[in-house]
Image 1 (spheres, rainbow, N blue to C red):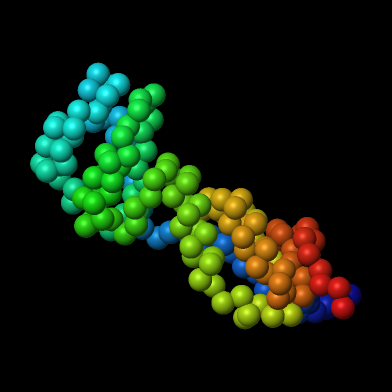
Image 2 (spheres, rainbow, N blue to C red):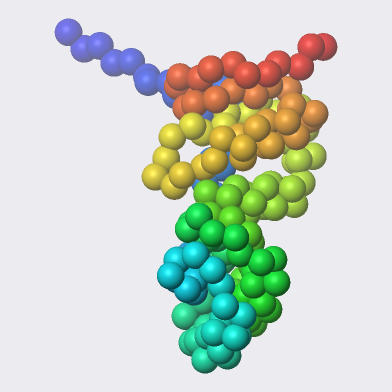
Length: 171
């Protein structure tokens, strides 16, 4: 018996556009500078010692990185200390932020998504890819979907073969 069937890729024919937000992830590494290492007895920041550190530290290790400045110690750090750090880091880093790695990643995603031309998705059926090797903050999904819902015909989450409907424009 000779049965021959053509396999049809219905996903490819569906007209769905799959978007992977991981493509908008920062390409450069994120480095966190923790000011706790500059505290005297882990409690206070001495201005004279800190200014000397600022002058003599090798800041080149932060070249071409996104930098977050934090203090993980339970200490009061004067605002000027963060300002001093930012002036030195600005000569080397791609971007300087006050916050941990999660905050920096979120900020970089927000910036990347704010520069997108969403009109390219006008009246399109979009699937926003859900899983991947690169972490994407939930805030990026929210930001992207908010903008997409203004132009797209429909927005789904997941993979083209198994999606969760998120938005559908009413005619």
